[in-house]
Length: 238
Ligand code: PGA
View 1 (cartoon, rainbow, N blue to C red):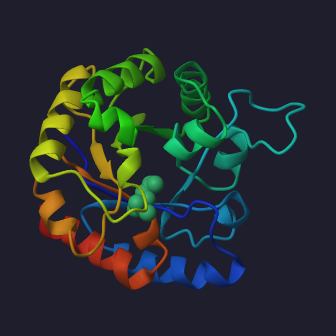
View 2 (cartoon, protein in one colour; view 1 turned 60 degrees about the vertical axis):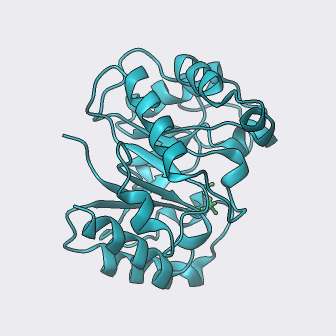
């Protein structure tokens, strides 16, 4: 059974004072049939209320060692996280993460009992050149290790040009891409989230699309009101 998931990605945003926003989102998520979690900055994971599930935004492939500034999967689990986002386009871009490195991180996440949220997506140039499916095929092949199941892995399709821009692919494009991704996965049970400028305005429409099992939401998850509206839109789609 494919799970419906509303996930927030706070990126490098949030101070202690913002735990209040997390609490409000936890209230909105309470009693819902859809799953909700927030990928908080590592500094906030341990202080997040237990009522909402949390995620790390990256982890190292090694469990510990001399890697200044990095965080490991056992550390995220120790801080209370149940999920970890891996291979986000901002990591691929600014930290030059390769598919191979991402696959190693995914295996590290599984070893610590974390569910890996593997992000894939084409750049604007690749989109314009009509290479979307080719790029996604390579990313899936390279960053999804053997052993991936619908229990230990979630896929997030995030076109790089749609992130934080207010732009989204057409509904038709989203459906085609999600069907393509599903076809490449080991079975039909994986949850495939759409990410990239999801907002309370477009959430209902996007969540109604075939093969879309929810959203990975950046900007709109920083505000309790807008993320709650997105959670409600997903709940209403059931
Ligand atoms: P956005 O970010 O919703 O702000 O476009 C999505 C993401 O990068 O996960």
